[in-house]
Length: 474
Image 1 (cartoon, one colour):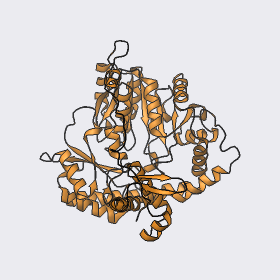
Image 2: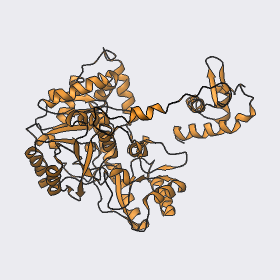
Image 3: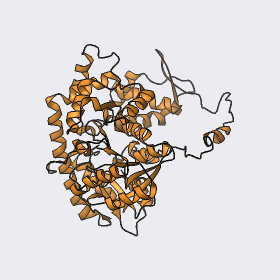
Image 4: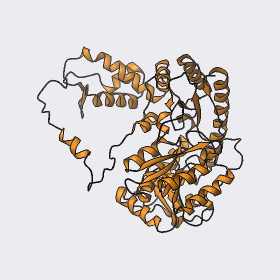
């Protein structure tokens, strides 16, 4: 049993037994719970913390855990917060710029499913695929480094920046790299640096919901450019630049999320040419480079490696290939824009935690790193093949237009008679969490879609069971 499900089950058991204790009454000791429920002390501690967060239990250092007083009892002063609606929606200097932040598309992938529900929609590797032992060893070695807890250079550790530059390839140098707190942080910095509030930004359609959420929170107006089996349609990209006046295009040329397609060779040159002709930047989100499958063959170089004029601002991260908690990434750019990126990052966060940078450097510099990438490459291929066969055999209502050779997901188009929201809800009732397609579109989608991830399940048996439950939902 995974730790997460053990914590949920213990919290449920304790919650059902609270009525046995008077208000303010003491619960059994942690040791007693460990012996009774046969779980670890860490599981007990986390379950109690969950009940504390729900207001059902209070803890007193050195005394234990006690049943809390109901929140409705006692004196509580309720203030009037209605004034905030006016302030939060007010225009700035007479300009109406959207200021609301919609995180729903991001939360779909980040929220942990209830106990017993198979996570078929997440965007991270299952713990069994994560290099946990290698990361633990790297963190231990990092902690012993001299100065590991000292303030790091603002741009990031020189050795880590150099590793990212070599990983990007081409003429990228360490001087053109900034270490960031993961890919999402890098995207946020890049969008804020390259477009003012109210400006249009061209995005692939469909595209990563986290990027759309960031763009809208920055007051930008996403303008969709359709994607087909060869990546973004460059004739439509050129038309979108001309009609919108945009100076920025955000793309994922390699194993695009959610479709999994790779930008075709001829279109790569066209994207750079069109952007250069319009005096525009391209943000290249290279999130899946370390998630290539065993049968992917040689990968195309990043767009940044072929750009000599500072058109491309390159984003990448170690998170997807390791763990959600190893939030270390990089921004690479050349020219005056690099100083603007650096300034925004410094203002936002000062710098990235040095121990985390040291641990990342230890990890990618160890023999375990290449072994881990090879193992993930093999396992993702096996899972993709098994899921593809299962979808074609058991889920004929879901059309699979493209089988990816990298990344972690299949992008499925629904038959016309299926309702996307209803299917997602039915799947959850059947015990499997899938990702709806609507959040991936910045405008009206052409059809219903769902994304299913084969990286977040425990293994082939759970993958098969997830397909069975999805068949039941259909």
